[in-house]
Image (cartoon, rainbow over all chains, first blue to last red; front, side):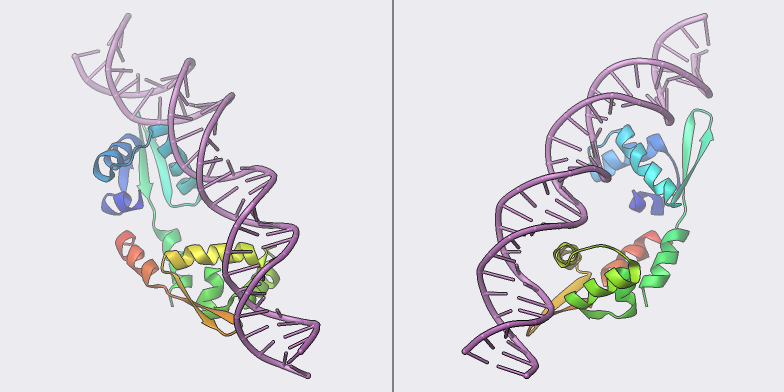
Length: 73
Length: 73
DNA sequence: ATGATACGCAACCATGAGGTTGCATGTCAA
DNA sequence: TTGACATGCAACCTCATGGTTGCGTATCAT
């Protein structure tokens, strides 16, 4: 998921699901993926925004940068 | 654990256990911690070396750097 | 207006993660 | 040499993780 987000940091839930299935050959359902997204959202790594029919997911790498600043040198 | 390693990247299993219990108030046994270390070792984040009675743990942040280079811009 | 679509919600399930306990073993200090 | 100490090994237990299924709902295109 993060690999995918690092390429395009703005995606639809549906897009992301499709991409993961096709490009990484993972067998996962939309609902299962939504749970992962919820966790990332609670961690501040992803924010989501309702755009009509779609749910836009926006990746935010700040929390990762913060932890890495602590851990790497 | 990684917080602790980022301060002193070389520690004994026993030391690490004691530090985690005292400084972070986590209630964890040595055996439980050893399992975590084994996982970090398989992931290449920690290498261990037998020094007589002790098991020296050495932290290696290269794998983290590699992933972060992919994920952070 | 209606069907297709993208999503949310909730119940349910199996497995493994994460922990404990008990004991064996090698090493060091006295 | 012997006891204390740091660790290894393995069996065992308990939930929460990570998944599924089923269905309801809002939005869009036609």
